[in-house]
Image 1 (spheres, rainbow, N blue to C red):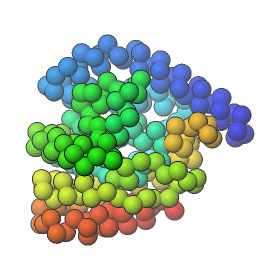
Image 2 (cartoon, rainbow, N blue to C red):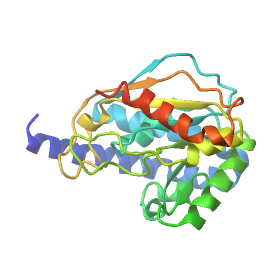
Image 3 (cartoon, one colour):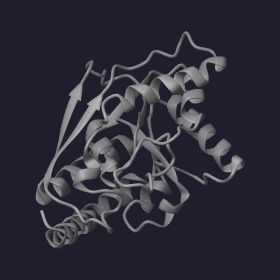
Image 4 (cartoon, one colour):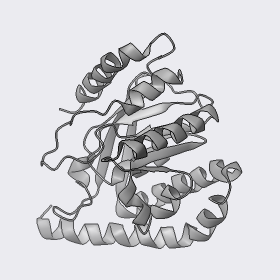
Length: 241
């Protein structure tokens, strides 16, 4: 697909994102007012993501190494190459779940309502902000809310993207709370839409996502954080190239 057509497709995709967000917004507003409705809110996010992608001709193919339990609380860790990664997890995750992301998303016209309510924002340059964010995430995990986090902390500036260094936070949290950790390899979404699509545009296609077998953390201690981080890095990276 030529660069011009990719630019046209990006505009087309953004139209559907804004169209369906506007349609869903009253329901988002109502269900984001109280944690008791977060399950419904996530069902709306799932439907919204599916419809946007459907009308843009973007589809997601999930391959599971092991079937995930609907009733289990997880910490999902994935590589991050595209804004579409949010949609990937809105469709993949079950029940009550929430994201942790950069604090700039508080002012995002679409994602802002979620990062002011159900999701958690964090300033990557502030240790205090990170401490508060992971404390809140820990409390949510104890309430049965799965956490979705991109341990690189940002989308790689290089194209094609390479897997960047992971932060320790999610791995220490998984060990402290004895929560199974699910590594996820988002293999080719960057080819459909890299970052926000501003530079290379986007195109229709199938996005392949590989969900690795959950890692049990109940027998790990804080001293194992680095080992767990390296293990997850290798697992995710093994399916990317």
